Length: 358
Image 1 (cartoon, one colour):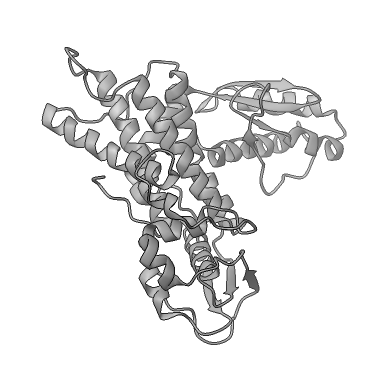
Image 2 (cartoon, helix red, strand yellow):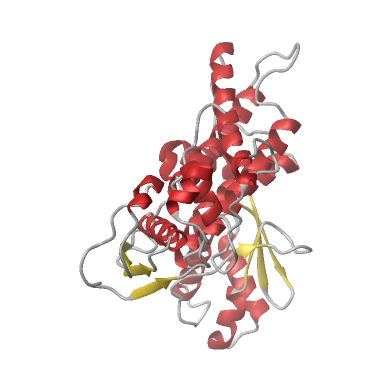
C-alpha cells in the first residue's frame, strides 16, 4: 500500500462515516498521511481527526475512534491506533504491502510512480540562458508531465547550442499560454561546453540537479570517482548490480516471484527499509514535481541505492556456497529487480543513463 492508497482508504472511511451520519462534517478533498516520526507508532500517521473535530462538534479522539472502526480490516492495513489528542497511526499489513507493491513495480516498469495528480494543470517554466537553469527547468517539466501536467519551458534569451548535448530539447516558441513559474537556481559558473568536456553529460546533469536550487552546485572531478563515496556512481552501480543478479539467476534457472514474501510474515529491518523506499517513490515524484525540486528525486535514489546494498549484504538474492535455490531467493530477487526498476525510472526522469554493466 502506497501513501496515496492509504490516503484514499482514510478518505473512504470519512465518507462512510458521513454517509452513515456517524460524523457530521464536510468531507475533505484529500487526506494527508505522512511517515511516522521517530518515537511514533506504526508506519504512517494522519491528523485528519483533528481537522474534522471542530466541524463535527466532537473531540478529536472521538472522531478518530469513529474512523478507526471503519478502517478495521481494510486491505493492506494491519493495525490502526490512536495516539495523543487524536492522531491516527497505521501499521501496514506486511504481506499485502509486499505483494501489491512488487506487482505494481513489475507491471508499470519505468512508469512506476507516474500518475495524474497534476492532470488539467498547465504551467510555463521560464529560465535564464544559463546551463543549470536550463537543465533544472526541463527536468522539472519532465517531472510535472509524468504527473499529468501540461508544461511549456521558455528561455529568457538565446539558447546555447551545446545544451542539446545535455539532452535539453528546444524551448517552446512564442508567448506562454499558462501561468509562468521562474526557475532561477544558483548559476553553475561554467558553460555547458566546459562541463561536457570535463564531466560528460551524465555527471554534468547529476552535478547540476543533485543540490537544491538555492545551493551552489559542486562540479568537480568527484563526480567521476568510481567509488561509493560518489552518490552518482552508487546509484548507477546499484542499478547495474540488480541486472547482474537477474543474469546470474537466469544461469541458475531461478526466476523472481514477486507474490512471495521476501522474509516471512514480518520482513527483516533491511528488507523493510528497502520496501518502504520503493513504496514512497510515487510520493517522492509528485513532491519533486509540485515543489520544482529535482534534488528530492536525486536524494531518494541515493537512499534506494544504499538500502538495496544493505538488503543485498544481509540476504543474498542468489544462493551462496552450498545453498539450494529456494522461494526465499526468488522473492529476494523480485525485490532486487523492483529496486533496479525504480532506480532506472528515476534516473530517466533526471535525464541520466542507467547502464546495465558498470
